[in-house]
Every structure is written in C-alpha cells, then in structure tokens.
View (cartoon, rainbow, N blue to C red):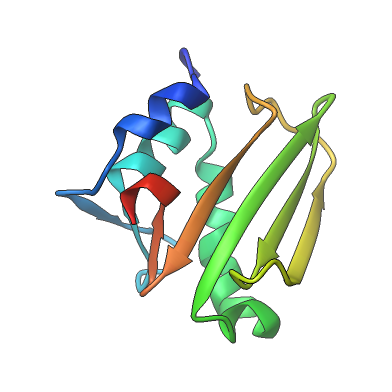
Length: 118
C-alpha cells in the first residue's frame, strides 16, 4: 500500500485503458478503479463488486450500480445502490486497512469505474 489520497481520484476523467477482472472475466475496470486497488491495497474491493455480478441476484438485476465503501475504525460496510438511492445489497467487512473513510465506485456496462470517469 502506498500513499492513497481521495482528492487524487478527481483527476481520473475517462479511461483509455481497461483491465479485465481475473475472477469474473466479463467484468472490466478502468484506470481509476485500478488506481484505488493499487494505491489502497484494495483489489478485494474490485473482487467483491465483480463476484456480486455473478452471485447476487439483486445486484445483477441492476443495470447501473453505485458501490459505497464506508470505513470506521478498521471495519467497513459495502453497499450497492441502484442509482436512485435504493439499497440492493449490503456486506459487512469485519476488518480492513483501507486508508480512507471510504470510496464510491460505479458499475455499468460491465465496467467498474470512478464516478468522475463516467
């Protein structure tokens, strides 16, 4: 894990390169999502989003998804919303060393991305 700063995320405004998720090959992720995973040591977060597409019916049913990770005292809650503030999935994360109070990622058209990359 290196220096992760949430303000750096606003510099990602589109993506010229996509990366294929190794556990769910139908899911891609952008440079911004890769930055979060690399800098925050959070490939597990991309895994959670990608695997939910395969295994959670209520998530899979949403064409557009807003994923919010909320971190408090080395514990986290991962929420998936439908884009209209309706929660469709929640998972408690009993331990995390995610270096910020949280982050928001979007999922649409089989791509995990930062909101600024949309």
